[in-house]
Length: 453
Image (cartoon, rainbow, N blue to C red; front, side, top):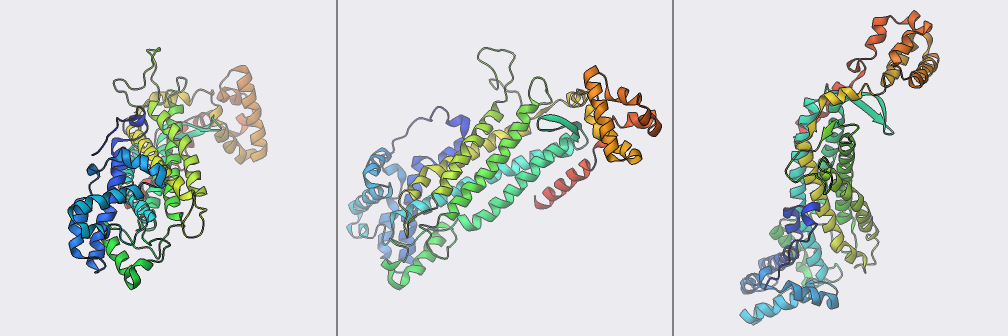
């Protein structure tokens, strides 16, 4: 019988129901059984086992028929869950057809089952992730298009630097997500492949029919056929982990930006409001960036997990000891964290509450210092870049010390007055006049997105 457990307390925060279902114990066991059923069908197709053995084997390949807790306890002694599962499956088939029971798991090894099951789970996970990434890209494209002319303070080293646009910031996020979508598309061909080689990867148990079984099994499971079994070559799953790690890193960057924009003193953008969202147990006024917090937590947790997958690549001879085992929980955890982070990011971006007046107001925070480069470049055409830089730098220091606007300080300088009219000087302190190619850059990103959509 199937023994279920309650949803762990924090799962709904850090992953999604759909992703949790894919990597549940029930789903993992079902994928093992899917492999066993497909193996029987494939071997019967090529004449390795009797066709009469297929139906009795298939009929018992249902996870709900097994006590998963008992299999888990047996795993502690056996070393992997396939060994006790195959024993129970064989016993179950024998109760229906003794002859068919002799062909359960014919010529396969535990790693064939576990790796292929993981690939099947990974395929389902990538489907979810790619769907959410498509929706996230759409939301980011809308944000970039809507705000490609909306000025805001650009910040370097957490300090105001010069004006940019909110659309440019969103386009940067979008461009990265689109690169990740391309990576996932390329990854599928390398990662979603069958694992089947028998005990040492030679398919010796099948004589000269081994490759026929591989082809038939791959067709049954709708997986690609690798050049050869990859039991100890772990670049496929490591690449999947790394690609997901890159995605989570970009989601973390988006979350960091939005959470900084949500700071009380900045107040330029906010996560969407909803009942029970972002409150405090003691402070009624709080509007906390809870979505960003979860994404940033994932961005903290995933890199060490990716490191585990990379470290596990160093495996011994034809079958690894310990490194392979390290992957079993690690890649699923990466997938679940990535899925959760992506769902939170999508929700935040779709409902992002932009405070446009505050974006413009913050451009005035430095009393014009954010336009210092604009003045220096204009003045440099007359007196040279170095001299202009030094003059404006001194004016900035004076403006800061005297709490005055930089424009007013510069207007008193004889060198400035001799080269720039009052109208020219004032125009340098309008953000729209110093956005460079921001709008063109946004349009380039959007054009590429629409082309690849």
